[in-house]
Length: 360
Image (cartoon, rainbow, N blue to C red):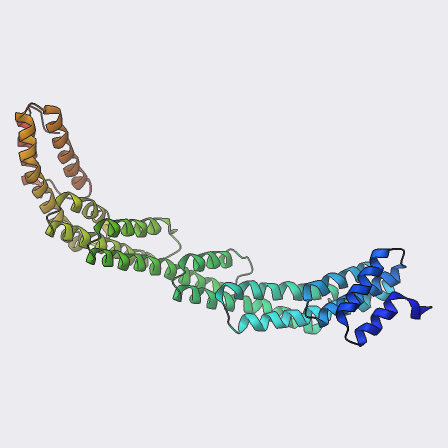
């Protein structure tokens, strides 16, 4: 008799809101095997209804899918409607959650989960108008949520997280053209923001007397700039970022020159000279301190070179001269003219002649 079937007892428990008991009894009956297909489908469906009432959407979905698979063609529609109803409920709930804010890391996955649920519902009920409208709304919302999430990441200075999100959005073939333009602007802002942050950090290091740390930080910023694809930021924006780096390197080099640390000034000033697009006036601001550092370094090294030569350590003296020559050639390679370096070149030539060597 029907009243003795496990599904009949489970249905009574469901009406009594004894949801966990429904699941326990139904699972035990299914585990015993030997049930007709209709009873199997009904038990799975009752598990789905119980799980849905408990708010366990994933468990409910799996149970309804089992019921659909086990049901006869004439009964399958019952469980397809239940699955569609569940999908609409879950999709709308997740979409509302994604739109309402929350942690940035969760918003895009949440709206994509909503889309997944609504697509599942559409597969079960392809003609359902409410599901169609909800799915269209969710697909449109994903781009707004992406934009808002990227902005939140930028405000938190989580630049890499913003870039990862934006790159994923830009590679999505469904991304609308207007959203693509916005995402490219935000991608540019992520690079600019991080380079600006690193430059500011380098300046703070300089002010604290941490020159080596300042140079390492500027190097990180320059490395980041070199990774930016040509089409990721407008040329003017790239020039602005290069000027920031040029200014940071130049400022660090000048501080070293003013502190009498001639050799320490060379690397940042040479790095600054590499930014040829910053303009002639700015390049002049860099070349002047670089020339002063080189002249001072040659004069500072000269007594040591002469002492080594007088003591017969010609190899040691030659190594010192070669190092000076290498510094001078590096400056020339970065745009400093030989006329500007004439005093330093002349003094190095004199030292080389004292060692009996020809100038390079």
